[in-house]
Image (cartoon, rainbow, N blue to C red; front, side, top):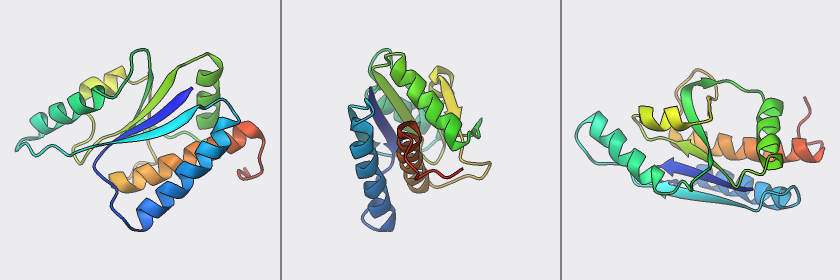
Length: 160
């Protein structure tokens, strides 16, 4: 199964980028042994439209262009479910075992994801009830992907 993160906005050089790169590499290495063929990240430019609805529509169209047919779509949304790491790992492992070709995680911009994208998502997850900057959400998602791989592999990284 291929895993992709589609995020509105760019991670600039700095500590967030370094941390994201570290978890990206860790997941890529651990994931290959578990049947996750690749991890990709697509950065979508933030829309410059004046009104919120247009920004969300433009960003949704750019995101949709990177989603292959029959993908499992997971929305990162503050209204989503708060999953513990073990449940998150079970979802990822089940989708892999069911033969899903792609699992796509989407991180919206400052206005969030369009309602249409949220409706298409098989799962919406949140990292607590707080609103997080998209850069931090990306780092937390990549860490959770790596943690999920270690849980599925029986590795002691996750000590819950």
